[in-house]
Image (cartoon, rainbow, N blue to C red; front, side, top):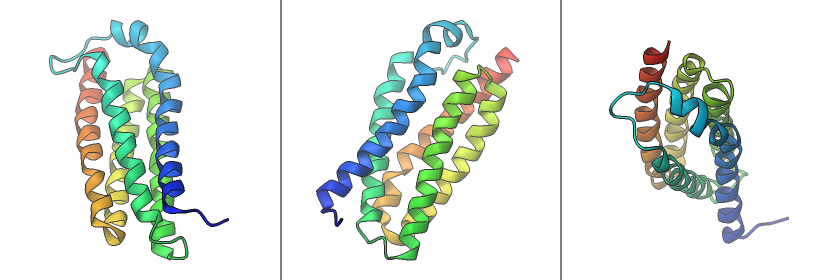
Length: 159
């Protein structure tokens, strides 16, 4: 079945948002309980900011994936870039599982470093196909950089 560009965009955005939704299954129940009880650094943002930021980032990820996908799945580079993209989405969900679901900031920190590397790799591969797609992932890697520092700080304060 051949998809038109609007359908590809819709699928790419929905898949990206689903990763956020799946991650939130592990995150949301822990915010008012486990996470609230943790010692956090002074630069920790208010909890309400995370939902809108992640929603926007997953939207940008979906648009970036669409821009790569529309170049055609017959292109080997496109297939590889999208496979790496999907792998980093899985890694993103697993960070929520480890940090929140297992209440393990140490494992979360190790995993977020892997996630950061996978995002960087995705940006590198996307840039070969669409510079715009790569640029759309810059806010994501910047946020995950901040989240890495926050995760490390929480681990150290509560270890």
